[in-house]
Length: 90
Figure (tube, one colour):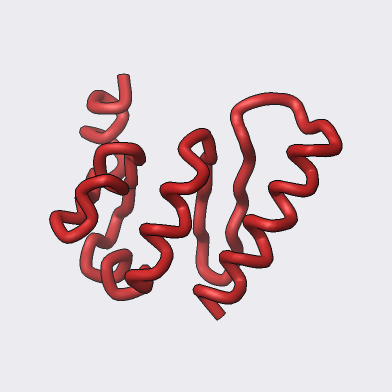
């Protein structure tokens, strides 16, 4: 289904220098060059620590979630992800 959606909306983006990341995550963008330029190299290793994360970036906003309902342990993990992302992106 992802491939069908991609036909109408966005372009899948793979990162040849970050094969583990590309194997784990499905990245969509409508501007490939802008996305590559915006993502620092450190983010790939950081995000591979969280294989069940779903994320969306839009301008200066980042939304992310884990695959299931949030409990105390996952709330802490989401906070750690947010802090880690802010250190890399900001």
